[in-house]
Image 1: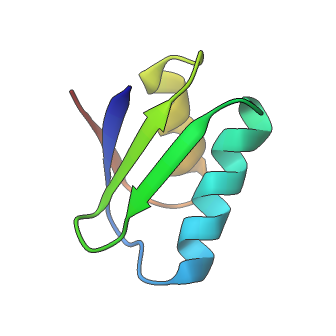
Image 2: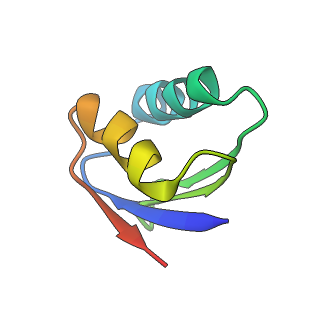
Length: 66
């Protein structure tokens, strides 16, 4: 499991978009979003860097926090 620090997640729609994007790339991914902390915890077979790119492509600045 790895954690992404994600800026700009202000609403439930943001959470939904991020979760769907990650799960579209890996249908088995477990995604836990903590909007208040600005983090997305991910358990996936996809590398953290790739997941970060997926989230950034949605317009959310992202940093991998291990």
